[in-house]
Length: 78
Length: 187
Image (cartoon, rainbow over all chains, first blue to last red; front, top):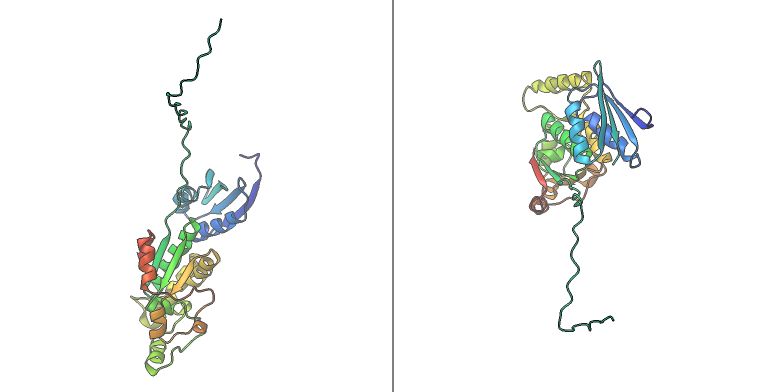
């Protein structure tokens, strides 16, 4: 994964539901199919929300890590 | 010596065997459209409408919001103070100021102290305001449909309303969408 280029980063740190998902959906629109999107969030609900978003939209949740209080998601545009 | 059999014209040619694809392609699941009936005008319910509308759009669903009764008042321009033509219509808008930024709480309103504290807390915890969510919803293609009857009853004109609303419709449009399979929400 680390060899692949992240096309765009969404910094949703500090934002509450539903803005991390809303900002991610808006950013994903501008990406081409197959490109990677990285999202940083601090909303604890986002771990479940991003899985649900990926499942509903068909985008792939490639990676999910947590560092301190920051959740990092890497998503691949469908 | 080779014998070439004459083709028997009475035998019906066997149909070519149907070859099933090894892996049946999974049908693309199309998310259900969402229909929110925005009936209430209180701050907390307006918030719920905006959160669900933006999230629905973010999840890839087509979201429509039908604006009726008190819910329609939310979509009057914030700058409008008094709306309507007759005395009663004017009084209605005077008693409850329209606009997304002037919503009251159904409980603990305390002459505006409740909403003031709620907005303060929302800012502190980085919760997007109903106005911000409304703008996001419009940017994401959420369709807002004003109720024709409510427009007339409150004397609201198109120029009183925020930009980007759809054409006013009636209850039949709403029921038709439900019958067509939209997931309905009454807020």
